[in-house]
Image 1 (cartoon, rainbow, N blue to C red):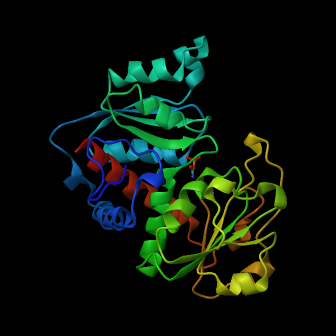
Image 2: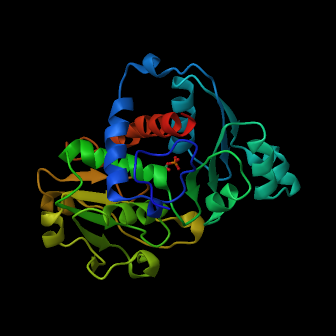
Amino acid sequence: MKFTNKIFKGDSFISLKDYSRDDILNVMQGISSYDDQNLKRFIPNKKKLIANLFYEPSTRTSSSFYAAATYLGHEVLSINNVQYSSIAKGESLEDTIRTLASYVHCIILRHPEEGAAYSATTVSNVPIINAGDGIGEHPTQTLLDLYTIYKEFKRLDRLTVTLMGDLKYGRTIHSLVQALDLFDVHINLIGPHDLKLPFKYYKEEYVENTVLTDWIAMATDVLYITRVQKERGAIGNYAFTEEDAKNLSATCIVMHPLPRNEELGDWFDSDPRAVYFEQMSNGLAVRKYLLGEILG
Ligand code: CP
């Protein structure tokens, strides 16, 4: 399904493959109208109830959706410790979604299985927002990634983006490459041989390497680093080094969806090219925008 106008009143938000270049450019404009410290002006007339249903750990996605909903004047029913819900008694995802959908106006779902968010839409009469489905996608992260790039460069075209890390299991990468493909972006893929981008996301024009060479670093506008997804069985060893930092241009930005491990040391945090905390902070505007548009 392709949306030709602004996102998505009453719709679910599951995968970047559902959106066009124009949709994304509209979204960038839309998010900026929510990227405002004057939170009160967004309080709607009608309070809604949103379920935050997280089967996997989360700090940023869960809490930024919670904060966004609260700032918009809504209330949140949080199920983050699923061991205290009937899921611990063996209840299926479908029955859990059917139950919550009868109580709330929208369900934000993080689940360990790829495709779970889409499955949830088939039994839900309220919108589902995919907050990460296993090794599948993390589309709301991609909106905040794109918005961070858009804020820095004022465009999403004519950029060289280098994706470095666990490209196989990293769902943020899977959503991001699909979105970047809609724009005039040159993509480099850097990572261990065993953690390559899955074939279904791969394009022949991508440049692949196992290390961040000096020539790739020098040409990069956006370096996007991800951690090894150890919880999914990934094994890999890589890190952004001081030598890499020297090879990046002064105008390059370094991003990371967080949480981070040894691949990105805190020695780089004070570098003006490090934007990963701003990126994380942009998640609030993105989630306010999504809830604002979806709940109407
Ligand atoms: N980037 C991200 O999804 O972080 P959390 O796992 O903390 O939500």
